[in-house]
Length: 222
Ligand SMILES: [Zn+2]
Image (cartoon, rainbow, N blue to C red):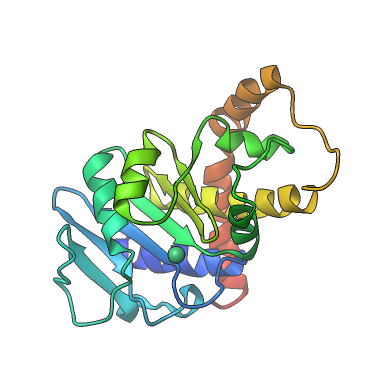
């Protein structure tokens, strides 16, 4: 049975909150309405952990709210821009998770200091800011955009994949920032791609992580 897209979006918001990405007003999750130039996104006036099905708006690609009169984050612009530029993307997550933001404030990409970091290998870019002019120029076919002094964006073909990638980035950013001043070596270059294939395509780590996040959100009664 197909899941209601609004329910799926709320689940993603709550699941991300349960993984430490709920740092106040400003994070947003969106989901493309296939076949229409519109997408659902959480209202600006609720944190990710607070979002219910009544706190979701629907925007067209000009930023017009076609569902209700709730406030919308000014960041709507990059969601519309990414959907226009990347037909392979059906969901977008942007948060200011603490460790993601700490990494962003180091103004560098994630280093490959853990096998799960390979999920971002050759698939992360830096953007000067979160305007679509900057992101559109930087994103290419990457799945992760790090915005210096701000936060990060992950995209995916499904909302579960974008959310699980984001939660994994928060975990890996914590490890990487903690090790920033150490001599911890990075994974050898030749090991990265095989590890990424194993973790993503054989173990289906992101799909399993999405299922875990749903259970975590339920356990915390979010
Ligand atoms: Zn932001």
